[in-house]
Image (cartoon, rainbow, N blue to C red; front, side):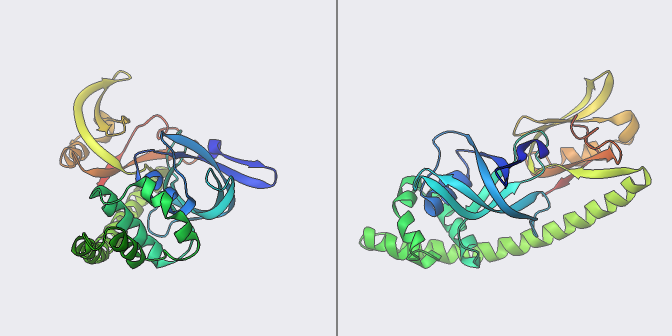
Length: 285
C-alpha cells in the first residue's frame, strides 16, 4: 500500500480503487456524496487521519476528503478501504458522512433495496440533498419517501424488508463478530509459530476460492495452487510446507467459499514471499 500513499501540499493522499459494480459505488457514493462512476476508477483521498478497523484486520478507516463531481469540490467523510491488497491499490469498501450506527443500517438497506430492484443508483443520487439536510438519516426515512412516491403500493414490501433487515443485520453482526474473533485467535496462534522462524504472518484480503490445483509445477517445484475469484493464484511448495497435504485438504473443503490466505515473510525481508504469492495457510471467513 505504501506505493499509493503520498504526501502532497501538506496532505497525506491515498489512491483507492473503486469497483463500479460494488456497494461503495452503487450505494454509498450516490446517496452520501451525490455521484458515482460508470466504470472502475481510481480516486485520491486527502487524508486527515486513519486508524485500523476494529472489526476487520485488513481494513483501514480514513477521515478524509474526496473530490465530488456533484458539488465540484472536496467533501469530507469516512472511508473504509481494504488495506492489505499487496501491489494493488487499496479498494474502497464503503463510505459515509456521519459517524452514527444508523449509517450501517442505511448501507444494508440501500444494498438490499437495490438487489430487489426497488431502487437504483440514480434514485439514490436524486435524494442526496435530503441526506445532506438530515431528512434522510435512518432506514425509516427512506421507507417513508418510497411509500409517498409509490402511493403505498409497496408499503408492506418495504416494511417487511426493513423488519427482515433489522433481524438479519443483528444476526449477521453477531455471527461476523464471533467469526472474526475466532479468526484472530487462529492468526495469533500462527504468528507464534512464525515467530520461531523469525517471520511475520501477512494476511491477504478475503476473496472467494474457486479452485485448488494439486501437483502443479511452479518454478520447478510441485505445488498446490489456489485459484481465487479475482484471478489471483497462490502457491505452496508441498514437499516443504505441506508434506501430509493437510493444508491442501483444508483448502479443497473451502472451494466456493470466501477465505483468507496467509504468507510468512522474514522479518528482515518484508514482502519476500507474500509479494510472490506463496501461502502457508487458509482460513474460512
